[in-house]
Length: 213
Image (cartoon, rainbow, N blue to C red; front, side, top):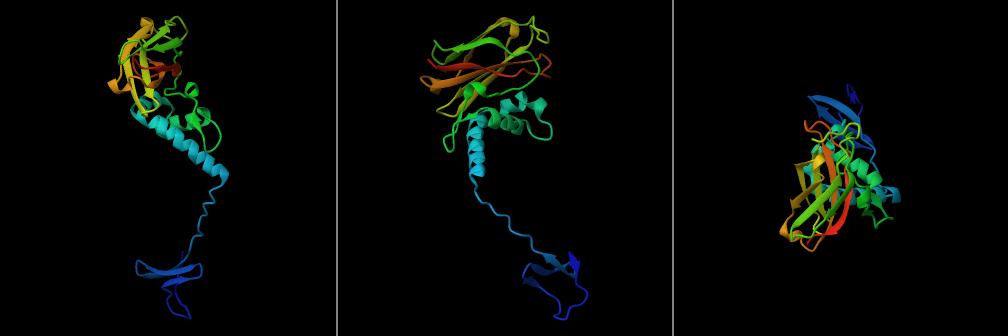
């Protein structure tokens, strides 16, 4: 920005080429107009935007969970953005514009606790999902009192329900109730653990795709 003291054409108000004249706090000043930033819509840009769109659709129903599940990785960003960054890079498959979520590769929580072992999900009772796993509390860093984080994601409805603290690592089983509207739908199930003080979590693990009874 330059201050205009004298000019053979007087005070410039308005635009002259790339120069813009105006008054600032009663002083005549000149500014250089910023060059326009082109948006060329390159193939790479379009691919990245589509990956973001697909990932966003998947994660948005789990926003509340991600605030917990990714809280320790939200350095200079939100927990949701940390989850977005990971899943865009690791959980998207296919070629533009037909990207899809590779559900077994997705993480809905991330942390340093030992993850679940031999996790599985099943549904034989209407509106219920049963999670099972192996008690691996003898692993270094694990505890019998680590509490479960259970997630059921409905792909067709783009809805998710999650349950924290219903079971401990040593229990090795926990049933959860899902909305009645989930019956007959394919759902993707995830499981992780949280320390009893809530400070640390494990990486989530995929417990399978099942049809809700």
